Length: 335
Image 1: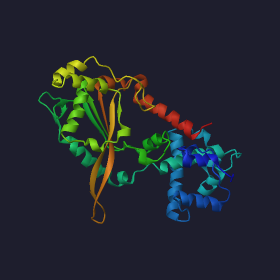
Image 2: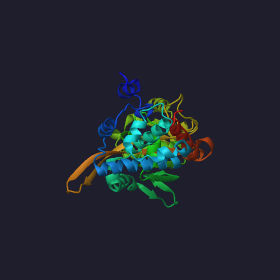
Image 3: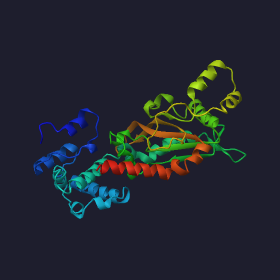
Image 4: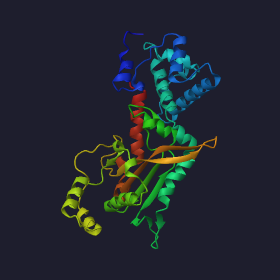
């Protein structure tokens, strides 16, 4: 090992990600076993060795099916079932298979971190408790239109649970590369007829205590739909304005000015409001004990025009996923 492996040092104190380290520094099988144990897998335990082997197999499937880079992983690497040998090969930059082994280990690491213990164990209970707060206020009027409270909706969608590979793909974009930073295992989407109705949806969620603003994670809030500074100035100037008056005033307003922080894999034409709530979930464990924990879920609100644009061209979900896959491929195989 060098006196100071700088890439590893940066991953500890400079905010770099472990999956961006170009090589490991493992020289013997004992070193490799100690490395694996410090990581969290005691490979002397047959159950944990089987779990590591399962991660390896899944990582190969991910590389083949999700990233479609199977040709970059030669048969000699595919056939290497000894995880300790993989760690040793990842420590030999001059070896012809080192690059492929590092790609495999990067994906194994990501998959190891893409589970949420609470989400995996209690996902049905979490889904039921979160959705119940919204469903009480969802109804279909005499005109056949779906509503939340009194606000008409074009559609309401609930994604019950983000699939494991989708979590892994998302983690491959994040410097932290750990599942604790994935906040949309469960997501809700409201599509409204216009921007003002989108604002009214947020108002209803707050007034009806469907969500609690104190439990919103501020760093996860995104707004490319409303000019909130302009809205605040208008309400200060017209404190007695009715909702109808405000609707008329906002009719010609555009999205917020500047370049608000957005998902780098989303198109600039995609306008929405997104924020992450946390709800306190109540479960009974296998011992009959009552347990409580906060669980995050994402809410997305957009008007019909933005929703239709998200289904077309550069802003479409397929294009979004293509950009994600391309970025993840560059991260796994940086050369």
